[in-house]
Length: 296
Image 1: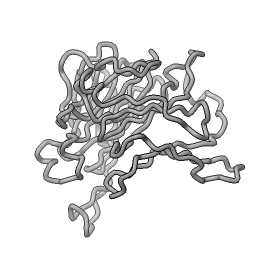
Image 2: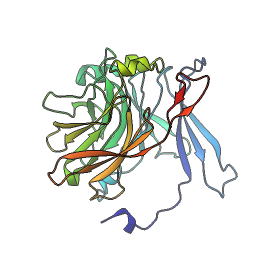
Image 3: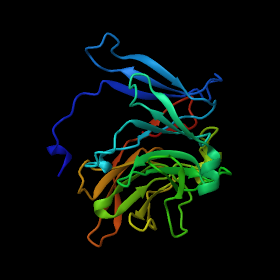
């Protein structure tokens, strides 16, 4: 089956948006805003609810669901909980958006100490639900702020930290986003930067020192072992990565923040993975920025 054969569902009527105060000078907790996007509503395009987090300085970042298409066919699963990893504090918030979708409430807080003690990881980033019901979250570093492209597993019912996903002892020096494709027995992860380097802002000199990433890392989905590292070049900083929106696809794209390039990754006839640059946006001369040339 392919997504193109799935009948379109109803239009979304609500959006949930993480709102961040860190580095603004405002000492308030980040919050989750609920936005009404129903064109028939008198509150269309308005924030109708704010859920403040119980702590200051978290820096909410990406968000994910407790259940998604990976759980298709399991009637016991419902997309009713939002997973909110905190990039700086290393907390993970679980928010109930099912009981009252227009006024979400906090369901559980996974404290940083759990990640530190059970996985030796910190700075959680991307969250994806798995077909097993568990939640897989990529991390940027270790508790000391060093780069470490590791993963943590949460129990999908209790949200207790179960430990690391990866096996074999070999872990990339940096982490960021990831996507997986079980039909090709693969997970691909990208690299941003070391947390203690990036938490206070971008310094171009840190790129040459190896504190920012350049690889797409290839993992065996079944064994959780690192297989390959596809080098996209110095100064690339590959971030968001996606397979084509097709369950059988053996290719996709990754965007690179600093090089202004998009690379296509694909499975070769030999069964390993390769990449090629397919888009490069020219730099632009600017004033008042960190560099005289701004990436495209």
